[in-house]
Image (tube, rainbow, N blue to C red):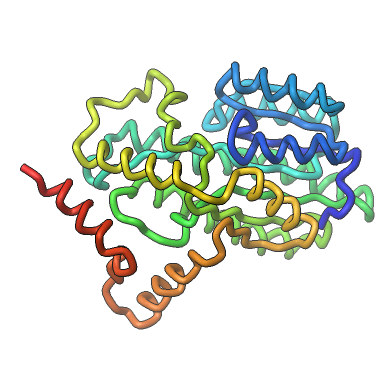
Length: 301
């Protein structure tokens, strides 16, 4: 756990908006050195200027986290500037919906590239640095936080590619936690599983690379986008509140971080389905009108 953040270094992917930006703001207030990473140059420039104005030492890099080469260059630059980071927040993520058989190969490559391989690169590149720093100094502490989603603990319909990617992040993070515990008491990990929070993820197509451009959206993808926009836009919990939960969890060495603890009831239902080998429960049992609306939209001629 890290209880004193002053003078420590944080690497934050997806730092130009949402949770990444809000965590950068907290880090700046706490006197941290910040490595800000985003794929959107204007958002990154704005974030870097804000954090520098707040007095933080900043290294800002435009990086596509799905690229091994770009992430390797980032890790080297971060280490040269600040040494091993104490906090790594593998947060960059994109969203894409629609019926699972309607997702194109490019949809899969884009979402898994950013949401899964982005975290993989962050873990494989920064963990060895952190373990090396810990070995050299018994007082050194480090922590890795990976952003998954409640969709990594549930399987909401019409969101298949996203669900798959976030389940992978939960699995990766749980394994990381256990693997770290085998070799050190100085570095640990957490997984962030937010529910609907206004972060900009529902508009992530804006940063989709041209070589993975989407074709004409299917009806299910249009319906999914509309429902996602509505749910995210109406979220009552702010990204800033979730960012504070992240820092609180790092200080307390808490593994699971939830933006909406009450939503865990749905996870319990899913796990009971698994334990009892019963068919998956209707996800709209609590709000049948949403299920009716979705089925009507998808079955319309």
